[in-house]
Image (cartoon, rainbow, N blue to C red; front, top):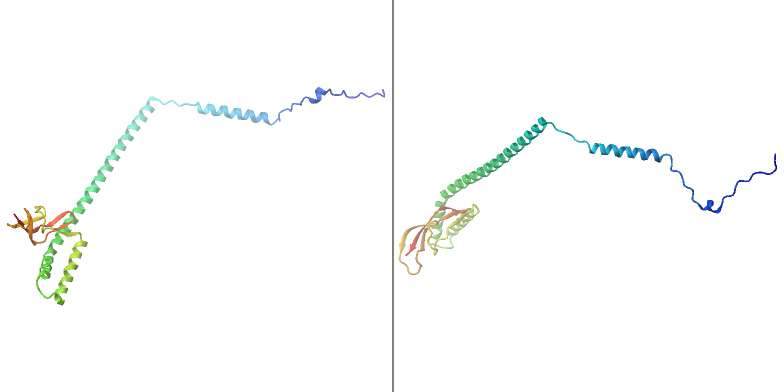
Length: 203
């Protein structure tokens, strides 16, 4: 055997400087193929369409019409119920106010008697007089809490909606058609007149 041994060929400077390309890992190739396959399946799913038969189309149109009909019925019934509820509440309130007015009317005679008793002449410092005044003021407060208001009449223009004229006099101290005297107080309950004021009117 020859004593000379073969030495490997030395790389040239160009070969040393040239970058060596690395081969892609073996695992990346299957993953890329798998992603491409999934993307293809996704496109196929999105592109899938359905075709309805004539009978199915007619059934769908009929169902849509029936749904609209049910909606209309529901809206009508809701409106009717709301109107019924409001009408019933109004009637109930009207009945309550009428019953309340009728009850208060019965107690107005007591008010008149107390007012006359307080207005009579007498000793202002007497316990009897003071007791009557206290009861009368308490009665006025009760009527006020119930929503009852005395109608203003004296010195006011005559209003047939609130006043009931039983006498007419010629009095230059008052204007034409002005209430000059009140014989009996009138009252309202809310906006409703429950008793007209009985008055005398100046011509």
